[in-house]
Image (tube, rainbow, N blue to C red; front, side, top):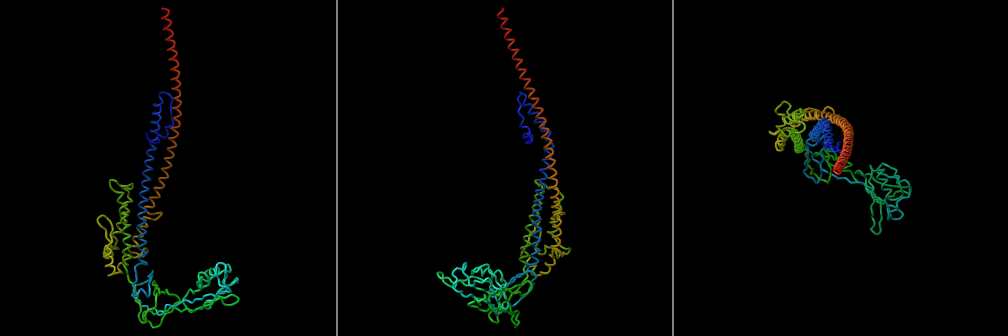
Length: 460
């Protein structure tokens, strides 16, 4: 008996001696009526298995698509690195737009920031949360030729620090500093200019300046590629060339510049290709699990061949010229269809002819391998027209329709069971009534026959 049949017939309990036979009749009838439902459920299970297999492939090919995006990003911004002859003098950051080249940089002056320290006020501030250096509602900040009106939220020294950092954060940085001892604190307002340079700092209320000590800074200066004239800067982070920023760390020995080399580096590209190879091989394995004697729910589906063709075009890419094949750069397929990346070959060939690799790779919009890969995987992963995504949508719709058919068929079977149960229950009750009547009549006959025999014997 199927689980469906058992579930919908277990409510019948007869009282006649034929109850078990009637139960069998009911179970068999419901089982026969459930055959279409069993078939529908089998179809639903098949659809669910197909959807699960499609979702697994979708996840795998989405990872492959993302690895192509990472390869494009690496090509755009990660193919250069820098070397520095004295890392104690400067550090460098190579970004998108940089080009290979060599630069010399002599740091003449690191520069310094203008600073100022407030006076102690009428009495030293021992609690910066309740005491301040001015009771006025507004304070005037002067940084060089710029004047800013500061409006603190209260009269405490902490309120003033917060207001300056909020209202003049592009000019100075304010902090609290204790110039006294732990037992006799003396909190002051400390100001430092945001930019290097000689701009003086002052802060005033209506009574005058609130500054006790102030010092002016100086601009940073450096010489580039041996030029005799120093370049001045308000910051220690300078743009030396497009995509190349340098941090000034310490002053150079006069006449001894630091050399900064920006070089083509295939290592980042090799790493990106290794990531691509891993996701490629995962896609190959995902397709292979659907084939063979123990194949998955997509066994024999034309989608598998379509996806295999996509992978083959990626793994054996060339633009029609043997010199453009990925295999020339150490990116090859083995007999099992898996992709491998020889970092040594990629590095060697790239160092010898970096431009040839760049031409082969192209970009996601401008031709080459990346354009081919982007288009092929868009054909797989497009939310509307992609070969996997469209079949996922179809499977979802088919599952919804099948679930409705299952529910409808279940309702039909439930009605059949209900009606049959009622009919058989009535039949069982009739049989039980007849059995009761038969038992009664049989008893009467037995009693009558026993009395007659006794009377005859006495007469004799």
